[in-house]
Length: 169
Image 1 (cartoon, one colour):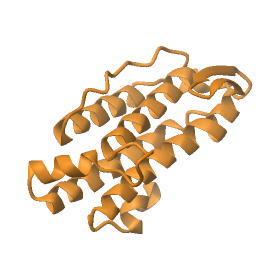
Image 2 (tube, helix red, strand yellow; image 1 turned 30 degrees about the horizontal axis):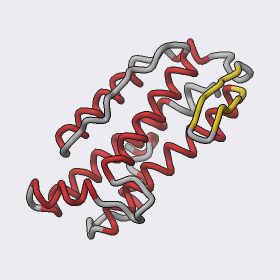
Image 3 (cartoon, helix red, strand yellow; image 1 turned 90 degrees about the vertical axis):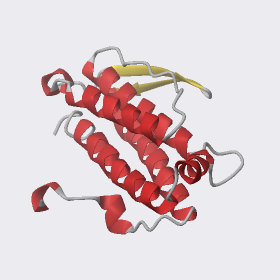
């Protein structure tokens, strides 16, 4: 299994699940105003809001796909103001991921990835970048988005989080 197989399909499934959670959140909120309040809410004062969690999950997925696929990542300006804007961002991220070529990911397990973070520069093999940085960060942010929605009363459960399994329809 190469880096493509353990990244791109996982990111796409995560975003498709996120879109379903957001649909439930929208129905639960009942109005644009209530939904905007939820998008601005977080779990703790030092954490990003629901909107920020979605933006960072998008950045993680497209950044990982681009680095491991050997191309430039699209830049999004983080200007989303409402649920429609966030759905568009998620859709653009999924389209970018779907356009990545699996064959570009073959034999990338030992390719070096260098990134700059707020904590300084980090150097990884591409496999370690994927498994120790990108996937954990992606899941942290979509899980936090899920938890913000749960905290706000959205009726989500474990099967909403897990979504549909590929071999079960």
